[in-house]
Amino acid sequence: MTQPSSPSYASGTSTVALLGDTIGANFRRTVAAHGGREALVDCATGRRFTYRELSEEVDRVARGLLAMGVERGDRVGIWAPNCAEWVFVQYATADIGAILVNINPAYRTHELAYVLKQAGVSVLVSATAFKGSDYAAMIEQVRAECPVLRDVVLIGTPSWEASLAGSDSVGREHVEHRREQLAFDDPINIQYTSGTTGFPKGATLSHHNILNNGFFVSEVCGHTEVDRIAVPVPFYHCFGMVMGNLGATSHGACIVIPALGFDPGATLQAVQQERCTSLYGVPTMFIAELQHPDFASFDLSSLRTGIMAGSPCPVEVMKRVVSEMHMSEVTIAYGMTETSPVSTQTRRDDDLERRVSTVGTVHPHVEVMVVEPETGGVVPRGSAGELCTRGYSVMLGYWDEQDKTDQVLDRAGWMHTGDLATMDAEGYVNIVGRIKDMVIRGGENIYPREIEEFLYSHPDIADVQVIGVPDEKYGEELCAWIRMREGTEPLTVDAVREFCDGKLAHYKVPRYVQVVEEFPMTVTGKIRKVEMRERSVELLGLQAAAAHRHA
Image 1 (cartoon, one colour):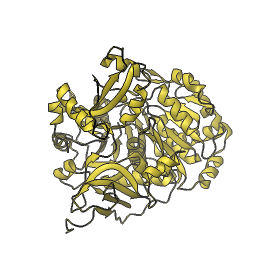
Image 2 (cartoon, one colour):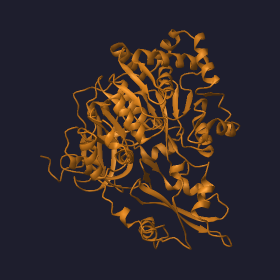
Image 3 (cartoon, rainbow, N blue to C red):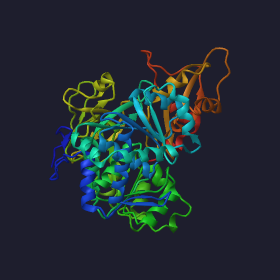
Image 4 (cartoon, rainbow, N blue to C red):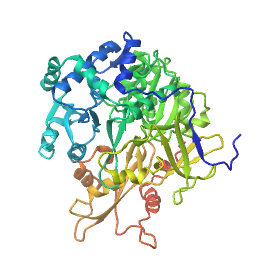
């Protein structure tokens, strides 16, 4: 047995080798092996695709993009909720070496314009609207700011049909030729992660990064071609497009899309109707499913496994997921966008205590260590420090931001996560806090600095600090402490929300607002956010939420 004094370092051994494929080559191999098996079910539209049929759709979109002049390395944005077309575009861009830029469906004009410009998106594939947001109108609103953007293709409209019609002018051999030119270390995906400097950063990921991570997440879950994976988590995030889609297609399993966006009833219905064997979600999704008024009427007996990730899982919720949802082999995963995303995962045979008190052990072909943040020295097992990870899964860097890349990726290739963790004698990792000033709301990572910088633009706000406060449903919610300019009236919660409406994603809008004369400070003049959080719990009456037990 490992001695407690041994260093907090672990490497993931495996008898299964890393895949040396591009995404396109791996997908074609699956199509050849499982062409007649069901690959994709879009429950909202009732559409079904075998692997052979999915391959045809992917090829058609790939040829359409080539007809539009998309070159290797060009950035193609996708701004849409979960739908079959999202999957077509994901695999089509990989096939021709275009870099897919994932755009959060919750983004508003301020965020959309930034991402389109920062990534240099030349073609944007978008839904027309979603959840009351008029995407088409918002695109027109920002288009003048984005001179590189030359083509917009709206799903389900004549522009989508026209882009597909263009595929008739391009032979299949052109896609094959492009595919053969690609290398697995080529950048293939940019995913934006909330930034500490007011704007998100584009984590740039390769075929090798995300194909292997999706593959090994599914390996740990024990997925095979007979599995049917319900993916209610968003495709724009690694959880959906990597752990979900790539995890499925690399094993010949079936992707089941319950709905455009998360809906607990639609998810339970999809599991029952499609006899899903695996279900993904953040804890709040599982809580919503368990609390559904008709939960007991759904037949979930087909479920065996799945993944819960994004934030800590309450102990009682995990017990119910195992017993009432039949997910005896459910696993907990930990990671970040910059690491494709998963670095640690519990195993199918881990006991309940491991699943609710840790985020598992190191992933195959990955290294993790816990270091003293100030010195970089590896701490002994059981001691807290910053979790670092290294291996095939670490991003190529932040798109066009080398200085920010250098702040998190050291010369030895270690990704510094900013999370405080401990590693026990058996190598199980527990996340105990965050060095970065980050809030996790229902699985969404939010950096307060981004919201602070936006709120600073309000003419009546002199200073603002945003913190996370405990919440029983989402784990954390945002609370803005605001100092008003002299001679102005105090802002209400509604006024702050109105100011944010249409400009910030809904999950970044503060739920609570405290108007104060001053902020608690240290003797050296630094803001004491820990004290702000403690005082907010008292002022807002959140003691029950603060006492809520999480893993």
